[in-house]
Length: 303
Ligand SMILES: [Mg+2]
Image (cartoon, rainbow, N blue to C red):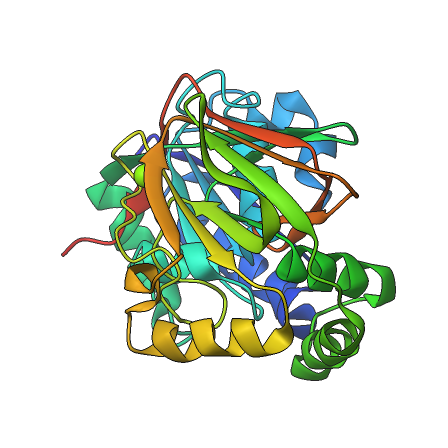
């Protein structure tokens, strides 16, 4: 098969510089297939549109944050389904790569990427928009409101370069130790499902979370619905109890826990509460989330 024009987006610092090397190897390999291939190491929103013109596939090398910016760029902010994005997971936060089953270990990766793009098996997944007073952005995976939002904001403040285990865990403990559980109110499709009270809330499209625990065990990424889970929590102890149940996949069945699905979600609070989406800060409450018009195409490896 020929006539492919592949744009390879890579976060050059992902995997301690392996992102760039891998992108160049893939470009050379694609060129040997007779395809046109270009690399883009800039932030996706800064990549010149002449580079993107006529592309038949995009490759995103990096973590969930990189993937989200690539999708945002190649779909014109969710206006179209895009050329088809192949995810090459790299770095610590690559939930989407795992979710799509693109478990591309480094060995044999180039062959698998070529096979995936030639085979062109495309799955179309829902994408969502989250709006706060500070920002409006697309998300693919999950929104966290409360403690994990606080952790992501704290991490973002200290983050310089690639994320390592320590840079996740140290702000996490620092945040947990000093965290006050704020009261929030959660509304789904116009109905208040959680009246103002201390809790943490998650809304998302995939089951798993960064830790591998299924926070939203009933979530599907193509049902045009966002799964919403509100965990009542006044203290770290409450949250630890939820986490224990979560390992067993039973937290959503606990008394007091709210688990619903809907198309539109609003979260308000008396004091501002930190929000994260797909591992990046997404401002503070109040926030609202809604389904975007078009689904986005992802290229997945042949089964
Ligand atoms: Mg869904």
